[in-house]
Image (cartoon, rainbow, N blue to C red; front, side, top):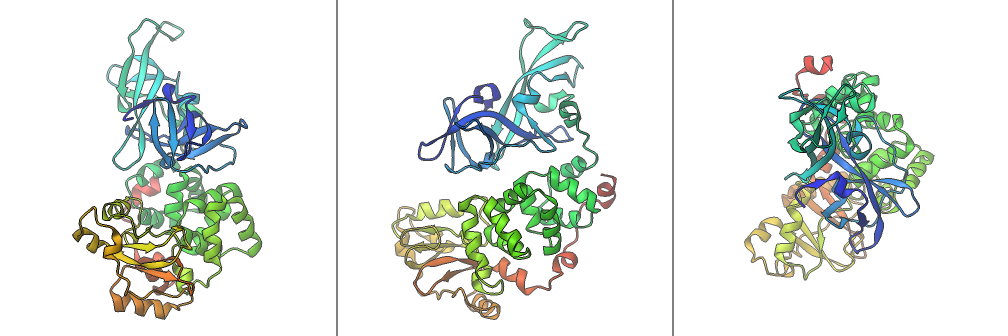
Length: 428
């Protein structure tokens, strides 16, 4: 559906990819902004059969139909939903809220809200259905006509108005960060006072904070993660790339590592545990366990669809790994790789088995950092396979992971400078 009203969504059954029942949609969670742009929908509040309310990120929602919501996975985080700063519940707080029309100043009440998908795969709260209020008591006129207006045409729906919370500058920073890359946000966050750093971390949604943490030096990563509750720290680790999560957890004492891994969902913690078994300066410690893996009978069209995924890191999109089932790492027998340029030259209906490069040597998980460096230089690669002695693909090393370990430890502090207006940041 291209537009979904919150009132339609409430109570819809929520299913996993195989049709398994998850629960029922109860509410939408949005992150309010300080400007007039539509708020981003962060996720759904879903009520399980046990009456527990849990949060499902919007990126896990594959479709919203008139009779059901379908998720990309049947596994959901079972922790109780807790509303965070800078979050608003659409049905719980936005509906029936008093507001005004920007153009005329007429007083209105919000009676419904519509969300719409964007090209970026995000959903935004794009439209509001409002009715005029009148009289000394400000009652809604039941016979007044319903208007469906763009979000920016209605005022008086700030975080303070709806929740009683004051943005206190952190929200101003979040607004500035909205159009910045994660690496530039990290450069700004690094220079903030500790108190403001914590306010920003508390107000960011999990996915965004995970992206920013991946760009921070290890000491800053650890300090921010320690500031969070253990439950939220586990959520952030789940949202990080497994290799980055493993590098960060390696900075913690074994007891703290174990506690955080226990709090993570098993399907998220398992690849991180495997990475922690390797030294950080080996191919096994550098690799990501989530490259694009397909079986030999997949078509070129399927392979291209996988590497077009906007969430796939650029280096991983340069290569498709071909293996016998199972496709999850460690896979079945490793067959070889297909380079993305070869895919562009092949007919879409052709099976990728015909385009496999089986001559490219693979890295051993115990290969040292100098060995990995020579390997990338020799074969001019952006990404390379890591295969165990039993011929199972364990993961892939990317050139950016390699550079992280080749550069001086303080390169993040000295190598990149934030391009944001410093005066504006300090004022926030």
